[in-house]
Length: 141
Image (cartoon, rainbow, N blue to C red):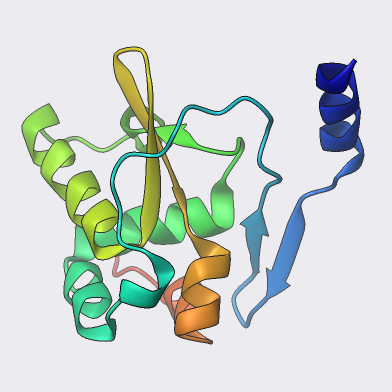
């Protein structure tokens, strides 16, 4: 019966959106029965210089921005991003985001899925994610 109540609560809990200049940051409700997250820093251990260093890479900045503005599900596999990079390179970038405390990753069988730790980052660094969402990626030729 508890599972039914959790599923009903999830269906009734709409996605939340945080307002920013460019659009809305999507925060989808956490579904029940998720696997435990992979190791990540606690909220109190998040350091601005570490977060900014991880976001200084344009690819990682694009990944976070896409998760903030275009998420279709609670979390996404690296294939959802449509990035034309070797798997080893993507693994490195997603690990850097997780270890900096920007994303949370969970293992689902053979794949890892990620989402942004919006509440944690907003509590430590108010306005940072709004800046990321407002950023306009340069056009590539």
